[in-house]
Amino acid sequence: MIDIHAHIIPFIDDGSSSIEQSLAMIDEAIKQGITDIICTPHYRKNIFTANVCEIEEKYQMIKNRTKDKAIRLFLGQEIHCNKINEVLEMINKGTLITLNNSKYILLEFSYTNKIDISEVAYVTSLKGYIPIIAHIERYRYLDLETVKEIKNNGGLIQVNASSLMGKEGAKQRKFVFTLFRERLVDFVASDIHEKRRNWMSKAYRLVVRKFGQDYGQRVFYENGLSILL
Image (cartoon, rainbow, N blue to C red; front, top):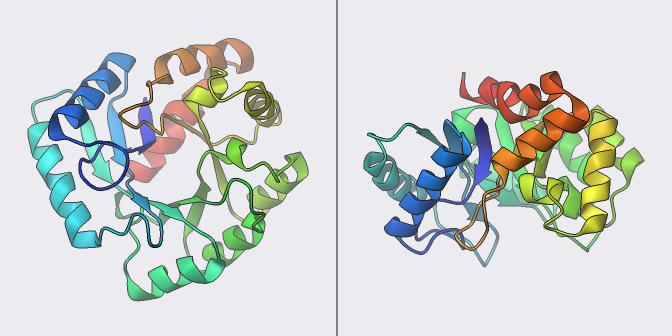
């Protein structure tokens, strides 16, 4: 499996507070059957503000510690977007870390304050990027039709393995199942932090059982591979 959303770089955000914790999370990912991880530390204005150099330094440090492990690490970022101008400013300044230096960018939004995510997807697509909407099941103001609009405007959809397993509540799980039935999900990821369990293996088996082997392969492996190639 390929995990495109994980907070395993130490000392950058709320993901990992030590090198030892990062290595433990990576070992657990290997046990889960994950072969590749895109490390996506938070960027959130006035909260998580590490610059590109700081992130790259910590990333290389942990990557060097895992070179003998059966897993590959890649660099990305999860960017919190309150306004479309925030993302455009980062694009224009070159301070945005894409996933594996590709055109894919991972975006998250307020869970409760309504933001026109479909507009953000449209504008970032016009700039030549491919926006992936992180854990789309968390945004309480979204419904099925809005998710379809996001997809039509160039956005891709990521859901968390924990939500599939019902660990984020029945409502989120129900919405995720609806998105799967409509074939709207593009990626399942762990969104792992040091205080969150990794559910990828169980989530994969669940998706294969309920929605088929082919779809499971796409959302856990094939679509992620397109970012790494």
